[in-house]
Length: 534
Image (cartoon, rainbow, N blue to C red; front, side, top):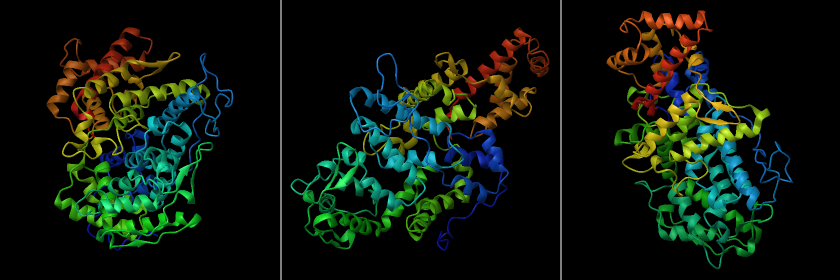
């Protein structure tokens, strides 16, 4: 049950619920704002919209064998069947299964339901980082992802416990080599510094606390045959562990035998008694969903009440998100178009907002191949899902003072433009199946495409989080939509061309002309800085 007593300081959003509000909410909580999603949520109240966005959903079907070819055939897993049932790994199948996993994950984002789950899976993946290249076992990577997905909108304390014992995490942060003879401090340090109390102003854990946590965590290791984790009492340090005054000088009683595993519960109880845990996570959520800068006012009026909600609800994540997304602050004009799109937001948002068609499950090899092609594009723009750059995650989510501005630089911005240009031309293809913006169909979906002024207005409203100045729209109209047309200052010439397309679709010259102008229009709009913002 959600505790609402502490919610007074975050003023609820009470303005009229408009399409622009819905688009802002969708762009931040999902990848892109699809027109049918906008229409669906706008017909609801904000409260009901949030109920849908925060709804639980069943686990998706697992990734499959899409990777047989003339160089390799998986003798164990039939084509189209899931490889997640297999514990047999070798150099050939592991790399292919890792690619299958990444393609599958990208596909889940592209085809997400109207919920926050996929955005939250990326949030937790960036928080509890593991790298597929270092874990180097596709099954452990898949199970780690399934764990994040199962807990994405659940209880944070439960998630921390599950991650601590997760085989991929045990391998990634040396938990498997942490034993009583040689305690390894890696996970004990990151558990505090990156995962729970953080490095904020109120966090004062010590080196001695790191050492004590490492001793508590001795004994966990992986079964190298089944790739599941287990607790080995013979490797566990059973001495008492004493913590600093930051943790109220707590002593965690050492235990022998299988009961040694219970020390983890005591450790988490001690850590989660600190107010800084809630503040640290609420700051990360705020930077991910709202804005990178947290000034004193935001700390006092947004972070502090959100953290109180988090604690009052025993570290359940949904009440915090509900409170944030129902607030006036979230919908403030200053927070709209204030973040630079991550590469995932850019590529997946583009595919979803333009309704780009991918092969269906009957052509799964092509489907996975084209999902992976998009994943490779996001990787070149410096967001390779499954492989963040280091244990702290992508710098754009934490690196002061630049934060999300780090996504765009002299290397990545041209790559974004090449990608959006390429999607109007069908540059990504496989076995004759092209990923391509259908410019005619997209334009037909707008309210009044025959009027060049309305066409530009509606396209800008659909694609941008902020308004485009009128002089820019006028330039676009005359130089793109009316270019080369006789008496090019007259809107009538575009209206006539569009009506001809509808009335006489067999007029090839007219269709070619209209298609060319529309491609130029959408390329131009996607190359402007406005399209990089969400």
